Length: 600
Image (tube, rainbow, N blue to C red; front, side, top):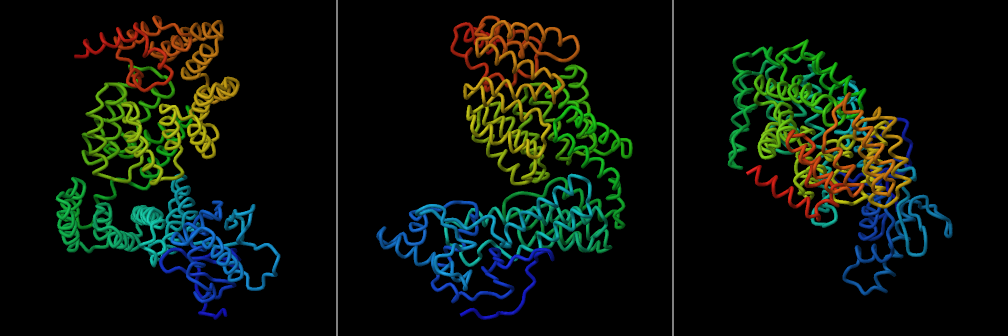
């Protein structure tokens, strides 16, 4: 029954000797021992439909009921089950023509009566899986500053994408979400590859990626920008205005105008045909910026200090680089928020660097995002922060910190649905972001969903085993599950990795208070008062410990001191679960009313 359809380049690495290859991008294809299986090899169309579903969800276990309902929704249950078993049998023998009756299939596993899955450990090459794996490799190289390797890995991934996911099944409801997700990944890969090629002066390759990106999404302004820059460096300056006009006409259909950056590029590149304006950001500056961002994302004290050195190096190489000043602003803010350094010193420095970045380049998404961090945490100007973040999105819809700060802002406001939407978008942009998993852990913690807190924190630890924030959220989750021993065990790791940060003592004191160890909690209060001589300790932190001890009046007194000092953590007051025990008390309500009147 099987007929050879000719050899094909599967895009498999040479060392990959998988006997079975399945393509889900574009036209669905199955290759067995380098020969393509015709549709007739599977018997009936429902057998092919079964294979598509199971291969796409390789690790998922399907019950007979699930598969029967999916394939035969119109049939009675008994008949649907009978038809399903026939299709499973057809599928087994199509993939393994020499399979002996009674011998288990290498691919279609029967795990229990009425439970099946496509073996995730089977030797099978699947294009979607390889595409995703190559993207992960590319982003890992990119984070490590290995730009040539990253560009090559992106190109390898792009060659695998032959078209929309299961292009012949566009009306199958279950295929719509993965199709859109893969399309989004492909578009992002084109954008990142174009930028990498351009920075390495591979302008023809950058132009090719930009053109493919515009075919994919003509409304994505980044591709117009990259195309204009590549054309400039290739000496094709006459075409720059044509590209800009095309961008303007296309966006007009959405009733929007090109962003400031696109307008600026059009004007600047026409004035400087040689494109020298693009050389302001040298390879050394770009490398320093990327390393700084990567280290800052780790959120450990040591990595943050190293990030500072790289951003400072970038400003030394190019004093007018807005992204470098934005990076310094983020470092100063991080030193206050996560590592409890001097509030007055670093808050002022963070704001000054963010404002300098914005002064140098009002079209820098990093500058707007850095200033938003200062406004939302240190000046309680949430709406102003939101405006800057929305502006950053307009300038670059792929800048990861913008999404994470929008998530943090909405979480502080108690709008957890919006917060999780932005965190999920951040995850789509970079599935290997430690910061994104920490952001998700924080949101789930505020939502009092400890199961998902634990999952997100463990995902972060897989990427960065020394993330003390991940261990801290694990401790929070275990307290929410009333598992105090596990919580205290996690806090031991927080103490070790954070160097005894204020957050550790606050969590420890609150935990002791919650489980009734009052003496130990009081010792933590004494310790925090001692620590305050060396590092930033807000009265807000003491309020959390007193709340755990059920000392409501003392907790509210500390909150009042925090309000008078305009202490930055007070921005989190209304969403912090550890202060929840206060909110029903009369003393808290009286304080809240006074606070509202004084704010008015």
